[in-house]
Image (tube, rainbow over all chains, first blue to last red; front, side, top):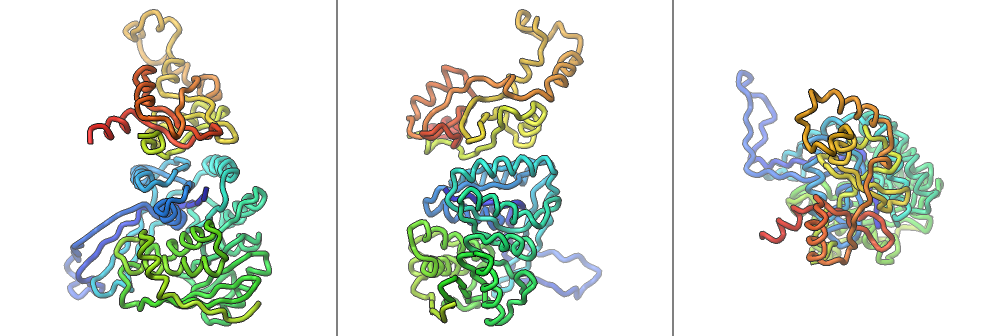
Length: 322
Length: 144
């Protein structure tokens, strides 16, 4: 069973618009933008990984905090998609993250992310109890996404340590300090989220050399693999055995929806690792899942056939031993 | 159809040492009127319902009267509920009927009707809670 932790779940709302007037030419009037299409689904990085895996037939349990009417919508969506839900209910309302996609500029969406509800201490204690219980039945645990108000940024570090003690492989897919604190515990796999800031820990990851240097640091901490985005269509994998470069064959102009592609990538990697693939080959499949997701309007491509087809476009190159 | 195809994979639950006020809070926030009770391993050990808690809060003579008409107001029940609030749910939970992942729909429907249950937990071979089946889950499947 694959356990995923999403401390700050979201209802992802997508709006497709013909034109997005971002400059106020007529200041006296309000701006009305009509969406010609809209769509919503349960979201948050861990939840997305669970949805991907459940659609691939993998048993997965999603954990985190749910609140209010939005929480009910998130739960319902997860249950309908075959994800087992084991959440702690809190007061308030889960966040809604909005993505506006303008026709012809799909590679450049506008996003508004809410902060999410504050998580009370007693709910955190309850979560930890449930988490420890579920770890006993898990093979991998995915710690992913934003940390909500009320929870310290060291949370993933604590959860990764718990996983290590329970003999469960941790995959950390987050950004900023939350990620780096967890990296120091030597989790199995690290996928830094560098969307907001091109840094991993306090190291910049703008150039290939900087990425490799950050990846090496993660390996020094005991990680088995660190996968960092080089640019929008390429990633670099650093493992104790060596360094691999990957490139997808999809040009940014062919992108239809960027949201969720990274999570499909992580889901794809775990899916292949479960089938016994080695890390570099599993990453190649993950890259294909991510690339296929970029090419569909839905948040993630959940068609095994389309992902297999995409495998042909993934360039994988062994760069050098570590 | 088997239990695994019918069940809601929702593991919202409490533990035997969960306090009554915490269980009421979870029921309120989740909208569930019935909560499975699981042990530290996640194995099903009981069930706690809104009905059990209301029943426990009613005066003992209510059993004989079968009506609240003789109660002047809710003060007595409120006082009793406040006394119960910091007691563990283990004091009020009931023994639970459960079904296994591969149990057939007919058997599940029979249990729900005969035992007058709103929902029934589903367990795996080791007794871990893996989901719940509500009466409405069967009804909605049958009516399609």
